Image (cartoon, rainbow, N blue to C red; front, side):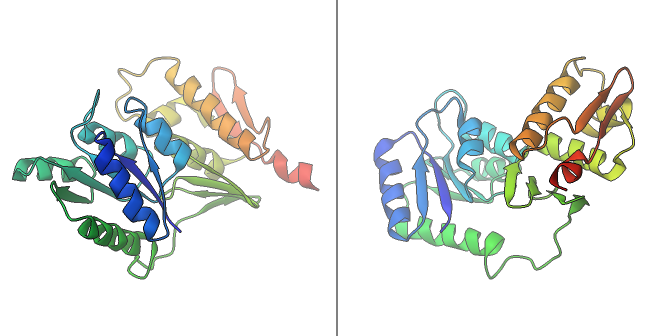
Amino acid sequence: MHKIMIVEDDLKIAELLKSHIDKYGDESILVKDFENVLDLFKQFDPHLVLIDINLPSYDGYYWCRQIRSVSVCPIICISARSGTMDQIMALEHGADDYITKPFSYEMVIAKIRSQLRRVYGDYATKTDERQVKLEGLVLYPERLELRLDTLSVTLTKKEAVLLELLLVRSPRLVSREIILEKLWEDQTYVDENTLSVNITRTRKKLQELGIADALETVRRAGYRLLPIWKEESI
């Protein structure tokens, strides 16, 4: 069973989409808070997103970019805008497909199934997924996932980059300069507290896996990851 997130402010269309998706055995959720779509995406962790272009507050292009900053899951845009430029913009901002209104619900389901097969099923590319491992802790950079035994957490793109640096160099120190260079190519406009915020968020993700005090701050120098979770399990 796959999870489908529906971001559509026309309630009638949204409910019809949900009805058709659920009929085929998948799980769907309707987004009603259109100012916090990314937070809901992280909470629901869907396999695919259906998103309208014309939305309150921020348009679908904006939310495509936000979702792409943390995930590579398929995004299908649905919109009354039928112009070629609208479709190009959707694809340029991270969408995988574009469906114009009015549409056949059977066609929407067919396109959903096609994207799910392409990414997760029979048509998925059969390549070895890159993994970064340290004493049972496994980072999947492309999947934006961190695992320890049976537990897993979803990461943002920056959290994944940061953890990869720390895992590869553990238990050695990683300087603030190296981290800043990797996370932000242009450091000119990076606030002094921005890195600290990302470190705090990464610590919280580790804590969700039961790992406490492993990410150590070396004052005025940088950070290092100590594999103390292995010692705790012995």
